[in-house]
Amino acid sequence: MSQVLVLNCGSSSVKWRRYDGDRALDHGTVERIGEPGGGPADHTEAVRQILDGLDLTGLAAVGHRVVHGGRTFSAPVLVDDAVLAAIKDLVPLAPLHNPANLAGIEVARAALPDVPQVAVFDTAFHHTLPEAAATYAIDRDTAERYDIRRYGFHGTSHAYVSRRTAELLGRPYEQVNTITLHLGNGASACAVANGRSVATSMGMSPLQGLVMGTRSGDVDPTVIFHLRREGGLSVDDIDDLLNHRSGLLGLTGVNDMREVLERRAAGDRAAALAFDVYCRRITEYVGAYYALLGRVDAITFTAGVGEHAAPVRAAALAGLGRLGIAVDEARNNGEGNRLISPDGAEVSVCVIRTDEEREIARQTRDVVAAARRH
Image (cartoon, helix red, strand yellow):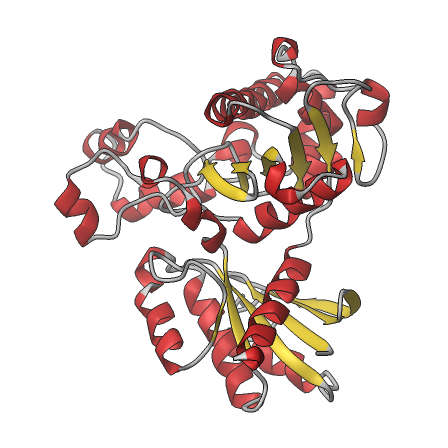
C-alpha cells in the first residue's frame, strides 16, 4: 500500500496531508470557509479545490476525520452507503462538525470512486470507557432516548500521544498507564490504562472538562437555568456563551494562551486569574485520574499549549511531589519530544508533539489492509 490522503474537515477549514507509508509528502489548509469575502462557499467546494490541485496517481486510500461516532462506531470503518447514512444520523450530536466531515467524504467518494474511503472517529478511542465512566446520573430512559452519555473527543490525538509516550519510555504500549493532556484551543484530559481509554474529561460534547480557549469546561448546570430564568437568555444564547465566549476569552478577552502569559507577566490581574483557573482545573483532573489508574507511569502534555507553554506545565503539576510527580525547570524550557521530569522520578512527565493526521493515516492503512486480507 502506498499513498494515503488525510482530510480533516473542521467547522470553517479543511486540513489535508498526504503520506507515503509513514512519510509525510505534502500538506495544506483551506481556511475561512463560508465567511463573507473569504474562501470557498462551503466544505464541498473546499474539498473539490484540494482534490483538483493534487496529482492523485497511486493514491491507495483516503482517511477522513469524523468528530462524532456516537454509540455506533467503536473503530475506524470503510465507508459505504450504510456508514454514510449512520454518520448522517449522528449529526444532532455534532451539528457543527459532522456535516463538514460528511461533505468531505461525499466529495472524495464522487471524485475517487475506486479509492477506499475510511472514516476515523474522534470518539472511537473512548469506546473502552467503563460504563461507570460513560454514564451520567440522570433518568435512564431519558438518557437512552436522547443518546445522552459521555463520548469523549480528541481520541486520535490521545491514541497517538499515549502510544508515542510508551515508545519514548521504551516500554510496551499495553503495559503503560498514562495521563495525556491535549491542551490546545480545545483541551481534554484522558486516562489511558494499558492502551485503553478509561476516563476522559470531555463528555457528550467537547464543552465539558478543562478550561479552553473559548469554552468554559465544567460548570454547574444551574448556571444555564439561572441565565435562562433570570437573564432571559435563549438556549442558543447560552450555547454561544459557553462555547464561544467563555474560557480564556471570557476571563481575559483573548483566547490565545501566549497572550495570556504575556499579560500575566506584565502584571495583568485578569490574566493571572485566568492562568490560575486554567492550571487548577488541569491539576484537579490529574489528581482524579491518578486515583482512578492507581499507578501512573507518565503524564504527557501535547497540542499547542501543552507543547509550548512551559509555565502551564509547571503550574499544573506543582505541589504533586507526594505523588511522585515533578518537573525539571531546565528540561521544561527545552524543545521537542522529551522527558521534562527529573532523573529518577517515579512518574515520567513528557512533552510530545501530537499528529492527528498521521494517526488517521495509520488507522486508514490498517483498515484497508484488513479488508484486503478478507
